[in-house]
Image 1 (cartoon, rainbow, N blue to C red):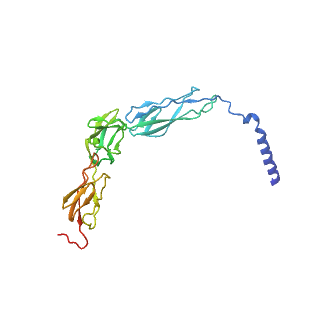
Image 2 (cartoon, rainbow, N blue to C red):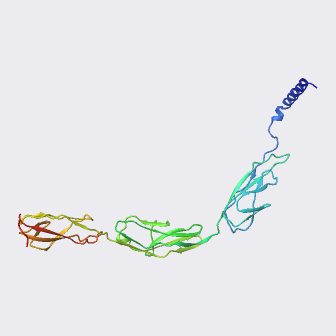
Image 3 (cartoon, helix red, strand yellow):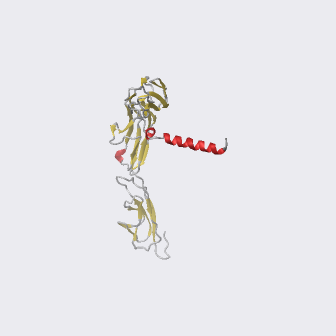
Length: 288
């Protein structure tokens, strides 16, 4: 047979195939629709007993179950957990029959939770020291299942709003001194941490007393001393023939030693005194 007749036969075959694509052949599947009803599966702990997975089709046809992933074993319709936490994915399907079209598969997730356990304190809060106005942070570590909540206490009394692993005093006051602890709680029970003492002290301050060169006898000099706290300094003559009027110092002549003091207040401790010596002498005069 030559190539031409073969070509004709192929063309006729293609035309015959196209003729078979009638509107009836292109119609959708005439079988009845069905749906799968697969209710959500409640979370279970790792030690839960095996249980039956329930899924059905609106057609009444049997539904197949398949374990897609997760720490479990599916035997027929019974699911057995393997003792590990995680997510279990199960798929329900129904392939249909001459009367019903296949149902759209439906998946459900099962959350497998760790075994419940009473809280245990694993990191204890530590004692802390700070000065007034500084911040103080206390922290605790606890484990349990489910994860515990926290309640900090000061001298045995619960602190309002202090319910995190870390408790912070942003600007400490003397009244914040005390003994602190925290209670970790979950549905299985509670555990109290060790007690940690927090000490809040007054802030320290220093005095800078500005020196001065020789001063003429009888001349007044303004004393200048600055406290790091910003509080005013006061002056006192320690020795020498000086006359002090507020912060003005004078002398008929000689060496005068002055002490600057700052006694502190509700927030600052007294500063260590600073001492400065002043010489009152005329030009060329010698001081004995």
